Image (cartoon, rainbow, N blue to C red):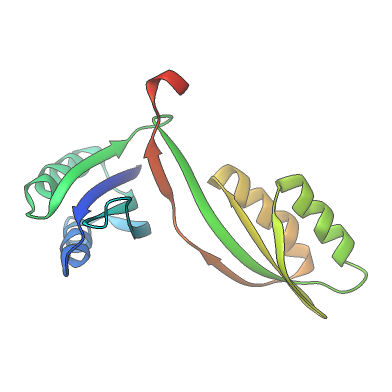
Length: 161
């Protein structure tokens, strides 16, 4: 089963290694891992997308909460969070195909951030339901390279759900 965890931690040396080590030590495959400072420079947020069973996740969540430097652990269930990912991709683009690529970008609200004679770099944000079909439409042109941030998530407010 796929799980998205948000772990608020003190921004200190070694915390990421302890948290990710706990995931792998409990048999979870980490699909995506993102770490960045928060609005408070003393804190960082780790967003992890994991595959594993519910029982093991419950155990890991309890053990994470016991770690020194861990402030909060939240397991986001379906619909409880706004989730986004940033993707950059370099795609082959000739003078003949560039306009069709631009149309696809417009449909998905993606942005071309670099143009070269034989390729373009495209930036897009969204959830998996947006990024996967976007990439499938670009495949026939020739995807040369992809870089993804991994998933970011914040809990929804009840008033705006």
